[in-house]
Length: 463
Ligand code: UD1
Ligand code: MG
Image 1: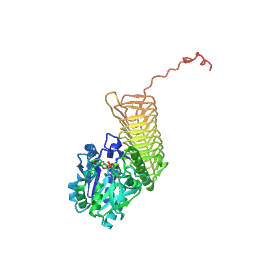
Image 2: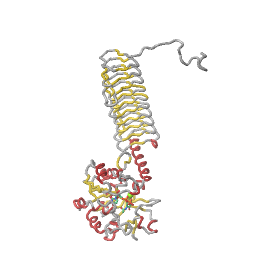
Image 3: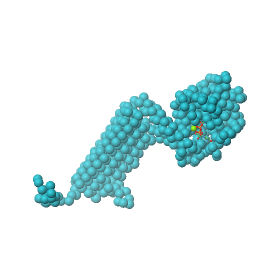
Image 4: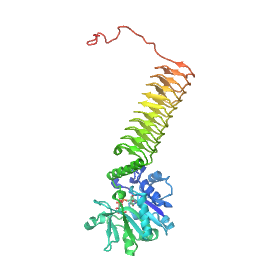
């Protein structure tokens, strides 16, 4: 079995500088979805991807997919048959086999459906199978035209259809299985459309019918064959993929509250008994362990979360790791490769950048921790700031275990604070602090009796 995916078109109706088929749906390029269905459903030995319009960009996005061979279509307006012909060297290697051909803009087709289609091809010894759907509004799709015996005679593109043909509600979904040998023969005979000059892949079906090859259809749910030609369809398709993704998580034991408000990308993994509150976004390569809680409005991007973690509402975590039992937020910002250790607590309005925070360490309020390595069981008081930048360079701070940093301290990097050191609140720490030491810097507080400068002004003189 061979697979071919058509991804060379411009996607002019999509109106984008980027090729349509690489626009991400749930964080994956659109054309990844037919690829995944193909590989999971039919396990082809090779997948030919036809690229053309901005081919280097498409190649770059898809280059790590296994089994893929790229073929270039110089004229991305040549049409879908011209596109398939570009993979002729591959088709010739699989002359006695079958090929599944999928449009790159049909991301909702499922592996199960492709498998059912191939079963039908084998059971009924078909030469070709078209995946079709019955649409209330078939606008924009090729129509399935049948002969008097009910066999598929042709697929007629909307632009070329007669008013009668336009009324047909059965449409071509842009997904096909063919026997390779007759397909190769028919492709050579496709004539350009009189209207557009394109070579249509769909013309192959007319040629099969003329030659008496057996072509049939597999009718599938409308949802699976939605083609993405513009951004309205793009949004519709993403919504369906999202519903599928969330249902899969729910079936595997994840609680998702008000799922219609939650956004979870395709590669995200979530463990059993984890709870996701409304308006959460989980993006990229995020993985969340069991029994965790992701509070309302939080955003997690390329982040690993351990087991039993609490991310309280409105926290934004990217490219970081939150280890088991830690509590983060509400309103925490954690970024750039930070690691929050087991049972550590990062609280309200705390920002942690490129830092590691040891287990059971706490920074619970209004703090900035940047470029720091902090040990275990250390306490960082409210309003502490790690000044890591002198306007030119960034510097590191090392804080040991069991350190106490009083509220509103300023730690000027590069700095080392030894184990069991104690920084009194309000200190400016511009020297390294040895283990076990107390550090205190504080301007002397003066108290001037009766000298409140507001006293005596109107309205301020009555006590
Ligand atoms: C196509 C089908 C139509 C079907 C619909 C389903 C043809 C002629 N028509 O129409 O019957 O109902 O899909 O969604 O096939 N592409 C190339 N090279 C080209 C032209 C297109 O690689 O020269 C690729 C595109 O990148 C896209 C796919 O083929 O991924 C389909 O092209 P598109 O222009 O969207 O075809 P439709 O008009 O949707
Ligand atoms: Mg299309």
